Amino acid sequence: MNRYLLDRRINANLINSLLAGLLIIFSPWSTAESTAETSPQASVFKFYVEDIKSTMQAYVASQVDTDSIFHLKDDKTGENLELKFVMVHDPVRQIRGNIYFACTDFHVQGEPEKIYDIDFWMDGSSGELKVYDTKVHKEPRSSLLYGWYKHPRYTFVNDEVEYLY
Image (cartoon, rainbow, N blue to C red; front, side, top):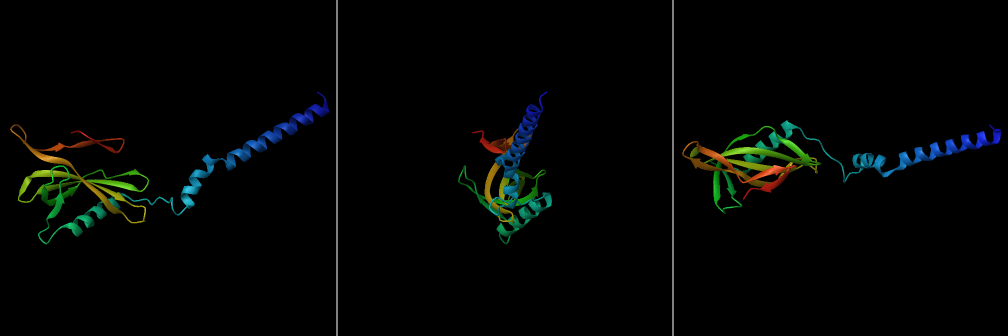
């Protein structure tokens, strides 16, 4: 092969390799992750199970009255519920980014067999988890065969609420 053609081929390959490397280094896909990590507006704080559960415990404690009653207006029925905290369900989870979720049980004041499943959404974008939404997920219903059970109002599809009725 002619020396001139060989030099041109080597130079073309070198230039193509350099261009490909520059495209990879400066492409929007390679910088998106590092931008999210360094940008103060886009920073994602990481919270763990213990953080979510302790936030829920503290939130419930801050919302109950002197008789340890949690008051919640049912967004579907308009009823003012008087509930006693029972527990936070496992698992709690991160939905996306700084949004976290916990499901809890509360029973009707004076009727421990009537259990409401209440869902809480928390935002951690400030560096601290804060409850920003609360919904009745399941309400107590009575059945001749099963007694009291929790009847769902909605389900989750890809971590989004999908109402059943």
